[in-house]
Each structure stands twice: as structure tokens, then as C-alpha cells.
Figure 1 (cartoon, one colour):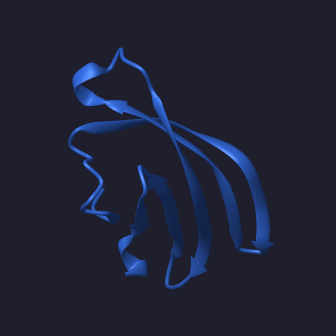
Figure 2 (cartoon, rainbow, N blue to C red):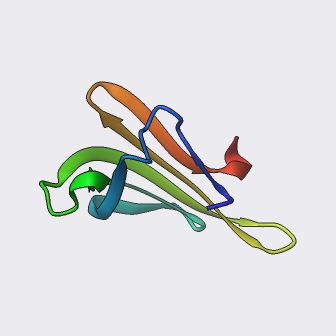
Length: 91
């Protein structure tokens, strides 16, 4: 988690992510893929409760540096607000 930067508006202390469902996934370059899908989440206070879904866009990119580095971005909308989750090297 040290390399993950959450959008501060997303109430991550109240929610947990159950799974990601990919609708499309394609290679856009030899070292990069893009995709869309649904992010399934629930409230931490009600783990047996109903899961909710949010549509997302994602990009994963493998970078060459002194060592291999994965750069990622996950973008989704929840109730009209746009959120980004990306690794700190993209800031």
C-alpha cells in the first residue's frame, strides 16, 4: 500500500473492494494494456450485505528503469464523482 495513492474523496475506510469484472481488455502497446469493467464493492460495516458496482477504466503499463516497474491507473465514477487510484510514480 505504500505505493498506492487513493483519491481522498473515496471513503476507503468505510468500503472494501470485492472484485473487478473486466468487460474489455486490450494491448495498446507492447508494454501497456487498457480496459474497462465493473468494480464491485461493499460497506465494511455490512460485509454480508449487497455489493455495489461502479464502471471503471484502467491502464497498466510496465516501465523499464533500473528495475521493472508497473505503472497503473484505475478510474471510476461513483454517484457522479470521478475517482482515480494510481501508483505514486504517476503523480
